[in-house]
Structures are given as C-alpha cells and as structure tokens.
Image (cartoon, rainbow, N blue to C red; front, side, top):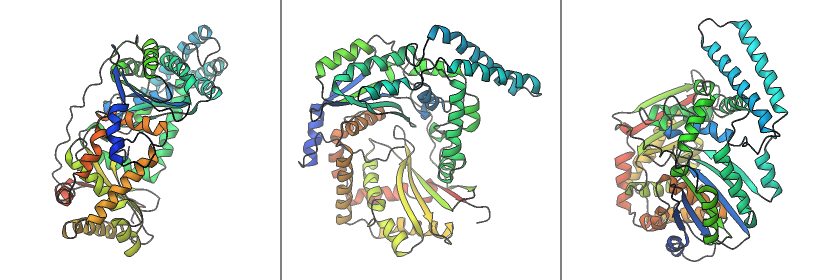
Length: 492
C-alpha cells in the first residue's frame, strides 16, 4: 500500500544536511517495551503544544487465512463503535438487545445457506432483525469517540488497514494525552461490536465502490491474485464479496482477542511531552492488558515464477494495464537500488518513462511505478499505464519493454541518479514537517521490521552505484518474472 518514499527520518525542518538528521534519529527516538510485550516509541518535539498518537498492530490482510479474509478491515470499522461506557446510553439495557440481534442475524445466515430456503421464514426473521435494530438504535450514541476528541481539540482521528498492519491515529493537544490513553485502553479492554450487520453492509458497499465498479480497483485486485499464487499478499484487504457475506461476530471476536494485543502492538507518540512521565502514563493505562498471541510469521513462500502470467478483465471503461515484477523487500540491498530506479523512471515530468511514453511517443496519458502490495514480505514492482484513446494495449506494452531494455544499453546517468536522490529527499522533507508524518513513518517501519532502518537508509541509498542499477534491471525486470494485467471493454 505504501510507496517506498519513507526512506529516512529527519527530526526538524531546518536545512541541515539530511545525514545529520538521520544520525540524530537514533538518539532522539526512545524505544521501550512493557512487561506485557507492548512496544513504545517516543520522540519529544516541542515545536508546538501538540502530540501525534499512533497505535499500530502487526495485523493486516497478510495475516488472514481463507476463513478470515477481510476480518482485519472489518475490525477497523467495528472498533469505532464504542465500548461498554462509550457509544451507549445504557449498556445494561442494550446488552440483551445486542444478544437478540446477533441470534436473529445468525438464524438468517444459516437459513440462507440452506439448499431450499424457506422464503416466508426468511422474511419473518428479516423483519424481526429490522425491528430489533430500530429499538437498539435508540440506545446508541453515534460517533462518541469522534465527538469527545473533537471537543477536546483533536484532529485527524482516523484508522487504516493495509496488507501489513492496522493503525489508529489522532493529533491532539499535548495536555489531552491522558484522555487519549484512557479512551484507547478502554477500547481495547471493553470494545462492543454494536451495529455489526449494518456495518457489514457498509463494508459491502465500500467494496462495490472501490473494486466492483472501479476499473482501477478491479484491475489491481486481479493483478495481485494472478502474480501471487500462494502468498497471502494475494488476498484483498476488504476480502472477496463472499468473504464479507460470511463475516460473523464470533469470528471477529476471536481474531480481535487473539491478535489485537500488546505483543503485536506499537504505540508511537511524537510531540510536546515529557518522556519519563508519558511512559509511566502508558504503563498505567496499557501495562495490565493481557499479552495476547503473537501473530505467526507468514511461512508461505511464493515460488520463483517460471514464466510470464497474463490476465485480461472485460470492463466497460477506458483500457488500462498493470505490469508487475517480483522483487525483494527491505533490508535486501537490491531494494535500495530499486527505490532509485522507481524515482528515475517515474517521478515527475522529466522522468524517463514520462518523457518517452507521454511526451515523445504520446502513447499514454499517465504512467506510474510503485511498490505493492506491502513491505513485510517480498513484493512487486508495478508499472501502471493508461493508453491514449485509440492506442492499443499491445503497443503500450511493447513501448514499455523497449524502455526497460534501454536501461541496459543506455544506463541511468550520474545526473539522473543524483536527481533521483534529490527527489527522494525532497519528498521526505515534505512528509515529516508534522508530528503526524514522523509518527506515521516510525510506526510503519517498526511494523515492517525495525524503525532503525530509517537511521541507515541514507547511507544504504548513497552506496548504490550504476552497476547495481544495471544488475537489478537484469535480475528482476525480465518477462519470466512478470504478470501482465489488462482491462478493456470486450473486444478491444
């Protein structure tokens, strides 16, 4: 999900050389581990009286099996629904209704699974479920987390689920940090998955908009499912449509209780606080949580691809294509060379591919290169191309192959490599001007493996030479490693 432009972290926005900031990172980040396994990263930054707070879990779509696809994303939604004290007007009155709603929804699910569905009974149960939900709605306080945070000056309250992780984030005044700790620890202890059946419909609609009626989403999903035959990176973050229909509360509760726990959890705080006092506060609110079960390492290894794979999707939309090549992830040394290659090929209007395919040959209106779908395990280098009207996908594919081969006969020049370095640095500088940007990068890299990758990143990037770039082109950008995914109207 993430573009690899989070290369190293700078700890202020002054114009000192980048390597000075990278060196200072190791001194400024305080890493602690509570007795229950919770990892805490603290960076004091007193430029404004605010704090960026991230809670991340090493749990994403890559950790789901065939019975769990989409569960992490569904849990992201459900954890905004409140607790036994927040989000309810009267939990004692609400609880029996929640139990009746779950029982009725379960009966509907089982009835629909039968070979011969009793339509009259199904209608009766659906009417009962609707009535129970109407009664329950009177007891629900909608979006109470958001309201409390907003009233106390919090902004950017959100969450995201990726292949590699799930994160919950907010920026708030520094003097409200204990409020954050109280709310978030309560959410982990006392989460109530209210409005489950309504929210399942919301996720179903989210998938429809993001994938089913979205040509880009459809192409990307089919490309991943073709490029990865074994590894769970092939699983959609939202789950397949049938997975969403099969979500149930016992499955969610079991997954949540097992994995959304300290041994898989990282708290990252960046802002105006005293580290000693803040660590004591975190220990007070989170230190007595049960450790939980460590998320198992994904043992499935994608076998080396032995030949080109192709998939075509018929879709009533403008033709487009993605071509993906298998590649290693960090800290493999070739990953750094590929980062430079991505920047040189696709970043900006003067990049090689933009100039060749958009400006000179006028074959496409847009070309991009990115890493997908995650970074904890070996991933893909993806070329995304949108042909001009009337230009065939075949011609675009041939033109891209010519440009990739040209990297061997006409390697990147010293000037192109230097430009790529500067683009990476500039992008980073723009991204870390806020506490939230710094907290986000630290969280992501800690989930992937270790935030300390950021300290050494610049030196590793600077060690890349022209020979390294030529080697990665030869080793990874050849047809036997690629998946070609195309989309067009039938017959085009």
